[in-house]
Length: 203
Length: 203
Image (cartoon, rainbow over all chains, first blue to last red; front, side, top):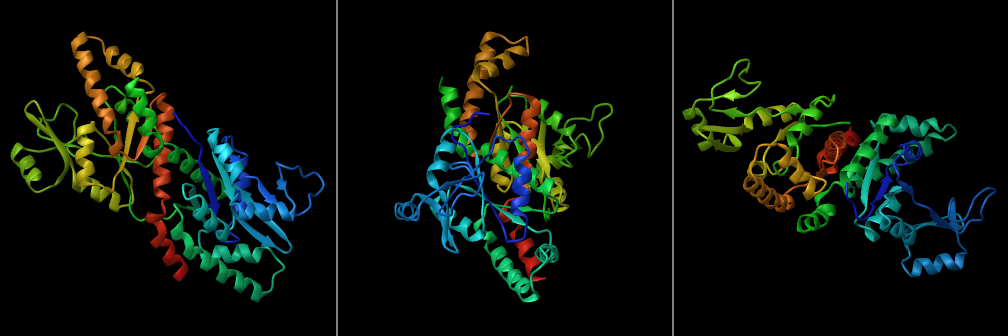
């Protein structure tokens, strides 16, 4: 298939749904999809490489990036910033590669504002009961914390409307196949291809 | 994945692109996709079964179907009518099955008017040279006829804009995989699923 630019795929969903597991399984497939590299102000840990694990930035540099709209989204956890540099995404899709970004719902909504041409996929638990099982399955949390996580998760599901696709995570490999299909289909969208084919006919 | 209704997939493209070959190859995959059954006024041939090969209709009955908008599209060839009954498509998608309709460009544009919620896929040759090879490859046609077919094919390609997706038929199995991906992705579209999931959360 002809193509001009790659796509930014944003994979999100309520906490506990298994975004990390699905994204990890997708990496094992031979898809040519690139993985977005985050920027952070935290210190590198042993074995972490700048530009691979993260782009490591000083607090001053990160705040400059915020001011100059160089981030598709960012958040502060404890004392550190984390965010998605626009440049890496733009460069990768300009080369014709698709990029995937796995991110919490609040971050995805920021990306929707800063990069609306992205493809937004909402990963969904097969049932609310199953979501509770997964949240409880993490083990050590108190009942109050579990209840509060469930409330947050339900609020996050209410934001599904902002997304383009809903993928059920009933089985990890099925969810991966659905995501791969969405990427293939998006690359076949008429809007993305019509000018390439118009040139073909005029040759 | 949850689902409520199936989809109508309309597979079209310029004459000579290989719609029949691709649709035939798709049938060999285990996709659960149903194939639309046409209505016709021509006489059944040996082995043809009513409701399977075609719905066989009298001229009078067919013209009543036209008047009462019971056809998604129709055309007259020589002395016979051919068309796509709406009822079969509606019944099949109501049961949650996807239906595929392989059809010429003019017919597809009629379906776009009568059933705009369909998913319209334009099958495209990898190059104009390859399209000419395929048209010439049929063998017996004169140069004038080949040139006139090429002109028609180019006019048909100009109608690509009316479609949702463009699938390149560079290799039949690749084209089939792209069509399967489009069907999967369309079934993951938020618009088709959100109310099912809203109910899930409210349970």
